[in-house]
Length: 79
Image (cartoon, rainbow, N blue to C red; front, side):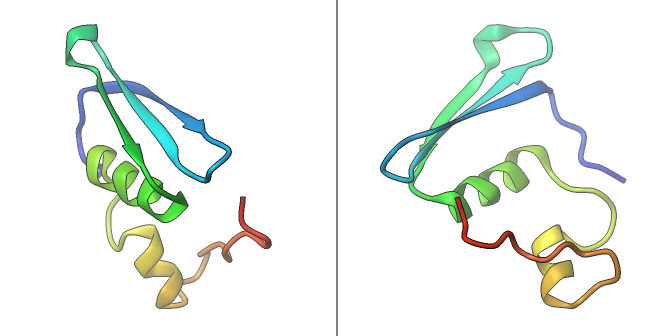
């Protein structure tokens, strides 16, 4: 079961130095929006997992490492 969260959508701003600003938009109250900065792509993905959660079973990164069926390979060349 997916983690229930209070956000309707998330905006990610990609910066030239490789950092990102993540803005989680609260479903009902903009005063409860959460915005924070992360230094790199891995930190961005960790933040998304932490704040929005994943589906049932293993988190996506662990499933890929375990070679789970249907796990997508990492993107070539990065961002």
